[in-house]
Each structure stands twice: as C-alpha cells, then as structure tokens.
Image (cartoon, rainbow, N blue to C red):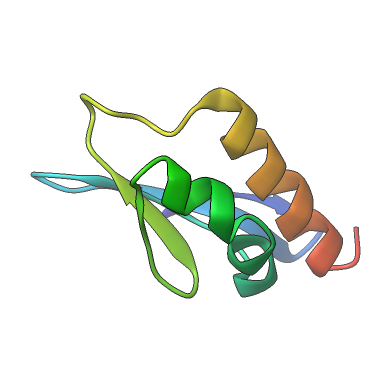
Length: 75
C-alpha cells in the first residue's frame, strides 16, 4: 500500500481496488471526522474511508483527515 510518512511514521495510506479506493489514516482521525464522513455517505471503518472513483472524497476532507492523522501521530 502506498502512503505518506514523516520520519519513520506512516501518516496516511491509500489503495485502489477493482471497485473502490481507500484512504487509510489513524483511527483518531476517522473518529474526529465521523459526522462529516457519514454526511457524505462514505463508508468508514476504524482506520479508513472507502469510496468509488465516481464519488471521490472531497479534497477538504482528505486534508482534514491527513492533518488529524498527523496530529494523532505526534507531528
């Protein structure tokens, strides 16, 4: 899985599958933005948000999740 890291710590990862894509971040980031994720009818697990290429995650939410994940990891 491809991702982004700071020093040796993975901040966010992403993957593409045949029918959906996923953005994977710290569980605290998912929890912090659960209401917005639900309001967009996106599927979320404890550590990720899945979406289709025809209905991607809005850029502002991607940024919020990445910043939150970074904060949860201490950066």
